[in-house]
Length: 290
Length: 295
Image (cartoon, rainbow over all chains, first blue to last red; front, side, top):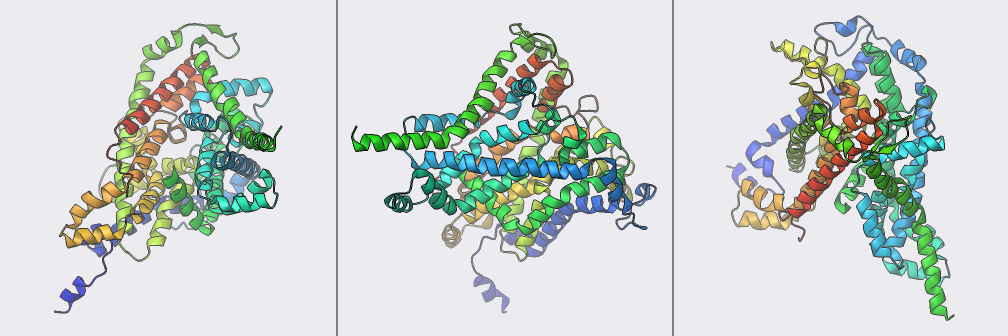
């Protein structure tokens, strides 16, 4: 008796699924899905805490007993995973800071300044976004080997800092929405263009800079192909490379391999848990503007 | 010189200074290398030897190599397996999350976790899950009385196995894009449709889909470009095996250039990949009438 009018008064939200599936069903699917998303990581942790023999137990157990923490110590000793942390952090930070600077400078010029060839250069910049990285890989490798840059971190830092067309595009689009009055005020105060860019425009671009920064950092932190090509010495390896060498050297020692993966994944996961909002906002921003 | 000319000159100087780092970088690290790569693709250049012009030899060699055709087919099969699944799956998840549920943020966070983790580590975890004898997947199937295949070691299953993992990793990212798109649909449209007596299915087809078409377009293009260039996953999981069953374009380029040191041929293959990506993107834009940009 009471349910009918209540149903009619239900607020109108988007209920595509809800109408024909029912809320309970949706919850069921979403929960099962979320479980499937997390399960491989739980399994990674579980395996990493198992002793050599119990990995192959049937049926497999999620909670290992006894718990073996020594896999973590072992993986830390066998390969220079600590150094790989430092290397990855160094490369990703330098690339992120560097490309935020160069991209925002170029983005500002394309968004707000008038100069001869602006449109042609911007179109050329957009055109470079179409070129897949694999095409330029071979000539760059040859140059950098002439240069003596093979087995150094330079090829992993310099090109990504100086050739990030997407970053320029993203920041240009964002800066174009900043009202001109702000800069006018700065100009009245006699600020030069660099000061206007630095102390007026940049502080107003924080969301876009955060988005670009997060994705540049993540992309370089997880990058695999270029370090694989350029680096040969273990002490220079980045985290993904170290994980790949673990797999090459200890093919079937799954507890050890899972401990190493776990060590490599933790920092990104922690950053994500604390800065989740920025990740989500970042995608939304780059997705909609792109 | 009058003042306005001087001011204009100064503004030009500043502007060129601002764009210089990126412009020089794009010139040195993209434009010139592309031209160079194109030239190399017409040269016989094995590392250690002096390069010499060889006409279309590299392209001829590439075409007569059965591996190339296998790789091309695998790449397209991989795209066909992943892109539609990913689009449908992430849209469905976004629709479910957008239906006014509690715990939305929690679900969104869980689905997004795989997207922030490195594909190398994730590929390693999944290799373990896929282990034919001791992996969690076959153990679970076994518990249900089913006999799982060898997954990564099985000729038929290897490529789909990589594809399953790829979709698993990418779902959350694309779901967030769709969620943003869905939130941009003005609710008065739904109200109007409801008053006109449109059912939920009709509202989905007539309002939701057309309204989020720019997001869909973006998602599809990015997925096509990304999956055509897949590398880390097959490299880590199978090295392209068994018997080239998971060998794809970028892995083939990598092997040709950095395992066999045939730089000319590798450049030729990379240009084929470039051409494919260009064509796919062009077709997308050419037939993008279904994309509705005006609100």
